[in-house]
Amino acid sequence: MNKMDINIIQKNIKKINIKYKKIKKILKFHEIKKKIKKIQKIFTQNIWNNYNLYSKITKKYLILKKKYKKIIFIKKNIKILNKYLNNINENLYKKKKIKIKIHKVKEIINSFKIKIFLKNKNDKKNCYMDIKSGIGGIDAQNWAYKLYQMYKKWIEKKKFKKKILNITYTETGIKSLTMLIIGKYAYGYLKNECGIHRLIRYSPFNSDKKKQTSFASIFIYPKINKSKKNILNLSEIKVDVYKSSGAGGQHVNKTESAVRIIHIPTGIKTQCQNSRSQHKNKKQAIKQIISKIYNFYKIKKKKIQKPQIKWGSQIRSYFLNNNRIKDHILKTEINNINHILNGNIDIFIKKNLEKKTNKKS
Image 1: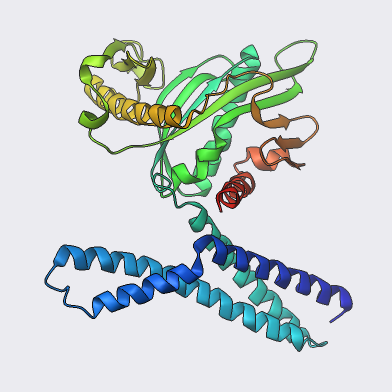
Image 2: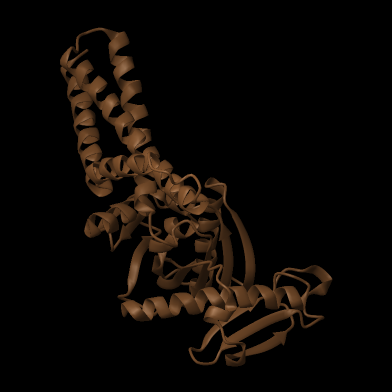
């Protein structure tokens, strides 16, 4: 094994050690050990007659034990890697063995890291995604459609499901779209995609082929499964019905099956036209408005302002002709725009989750 190979292996093992220490710190590993010992003492007491208490404690214990076992497993594998490194030689078999072990440990750490980052109350939930075109006219409408395609491909890669609830088509793309994304941690993964996405390209929609800047907004909010009694007062909503403008064959524009709901105190609107049944559309629009109202008051409590769809408020810029994407939150650039637009956005998602978690810890 040459010096270059040894250096690469050393760097990889060093990175793994750093990541392992970060995980221990974020998880507060010593506290986990203390909690496990405490629960084990409780199990020695006579709590079997109290089923609710026993069930609650057992559930907590299993979660802690799972985290503990994973950390110990990573620790053991790191020890093996360090042992390999200390006894490194020219043996090709050993080189392959070390590389396989490094890859395995990296995979375990990365999958575990994401679960650590997605620990907030609503992270596990399904979510709604609103896509709206902004400044940029027909180019912005086309850009909104491209963003929809990007997230659609990402959803497919994750093996999640989607349900289009409302869509307004234009000649070049879409004016607005709302979809429900169904999958474990859907909200947790996508929550940091919220904001303004800017596209800079030579426009295919004007004869001069001038450079055009277009904007579209992405708004993500968790699907809340709370009763409407707790959040929504039905006397405070206005319900409108109208003819569907989305896909639906002969049924489109013939019956007033589409439903729009307005929450009068906040001005929040939801629309649904994915079903031929007005009743089903209304039911879905109410579910959606409950989630929107819940999220609205949560944001208001934190005093977060919703950005306007215009210059200077973007979270990410896509320079189509330069094959470059700039993430303004992460302050990073990637030179492979087609790869990203094909749904490979995990690089941004993971880095954003890591950044937010590191800020808190």
